[in-house]
Image (cartoon, rainbow, N blue to C red; front, top):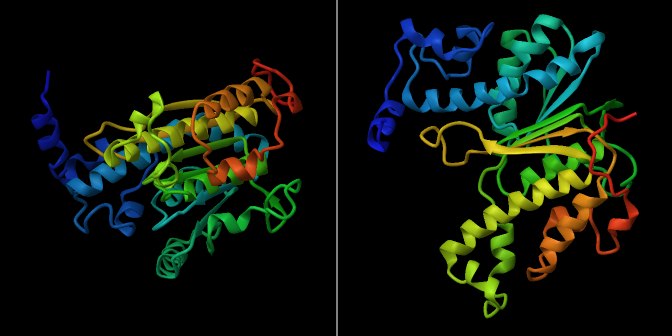
Length: 313
């Protein structure tokens, strides 16, 4: 069995051009990866890029069953990459799904103007007309004022939301966008997450559970874990079947937790009840996702107590 040192050394190795094809998905081109600067000009894959490619390709592969359904029957789905950054994931999804089918749009939402400008140039160079970048925050797509109105983009409904390492509460914005849109699939790999750690700072620690967040390092780790637990419960309460797992091996990234949610029912009152029970044992946590999606008036009796995962009508 390989030890940690051997695994770490392997993760730092570059892959020569002759062996790069083994790292790619079927139908994935080296030309795109060169444009994204994941591959070098001579087609090699350095260690940092290999880790990045492993994460992107594994997520794209896990999304395959959902994307097959979205692209079935001549549908024209809208996929939102929330907090897209350089758009690596969006470009890969476009090449594998939108380009061969000549259908579908990848809407990349990114707040940094320089990244948006660079990605738009790249999309034009690659002739990817439905690889679209919007310079805006993810939260700007969510209609907070008209909470009952699902988010749309140019009158198009959102079919899928993905977010790979959207920082802190941007992951919550992506989850909220997907839930309010009734997206068929929501897939997030959270990055740094400090909101709950901030909320726990200064709270009473004399209760038995307080030992979990008394020390700053424990507070950060406990807060990050609790954040993802709450995210999964919120998704379940709104009718999603949720899987939480590692995205890739830890040698590729420490920010490695994948929350994959598929819409299977309208609401789940039992999941809401479980979330409320969890929160009742903790200090008051006005986490943005909770206060927006489940205000204090929310009651488990407002939603059906359904455990089944029957398809939506």
